[in-house]
Image (cartoon, rainbow, N blue to C red):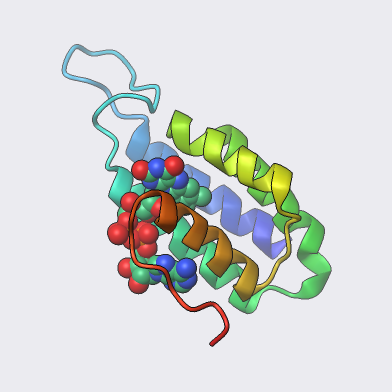
Length: 119
Ligand SMILES: Cc1cc2nc3c(=O)[nH]c(=O)nc-3n(C[C@H](O)[C@H](O)[C@H](O)COP(=O)(O)OP(=O)(O)OC[C@H]3O[C@@H](n4cnc5c(N)ncnc54)[C@H](O)[C@@H]3O)c2cc1C
């Protein structure tokens, strides 16, 4: 339940940030250039890393749902595709190691530094 509340809070904050109105007066559908992808990515990673550090293992199914939901709602179409692909080939685990390795998979694609997930 705590995870779902966290997710709802995150989506509300993200929604307020990303559903901005463009200078032309049209609602931004989250594919437009106004999105700060780095801020979005950093905040989402922070949320995911903190969830697995603190959540009770009984909420494992909620975490799995959260990850699948990100593959549908994450406001960056090509990131969504990658999230869904990763989930198809990697069984979700609500552990620090799983999120670390998922983060590394994205880091590798973006040529960013790989973190040692064993420490
Ligand atoms: C699920 C998801 C999918 C994404 N897919 C894409 C995509 O397809 N294309 C794209 O351009 N961007 C994508 N992003 C955004 C991208 O991952 C970065 O968040 C963004 O580029 C900003 O990078 P950054 O260098 O600020 O650090 P971030 O990658 O945002 O990381 C934030 C901080 O976490 C720490 N960190 C880094 N790696 C790890 C790790 N493995 N374990 C623990 N801590 C770590 C570092 O201290 C780093 O400064 C995705 C984000 C998420 C959450």
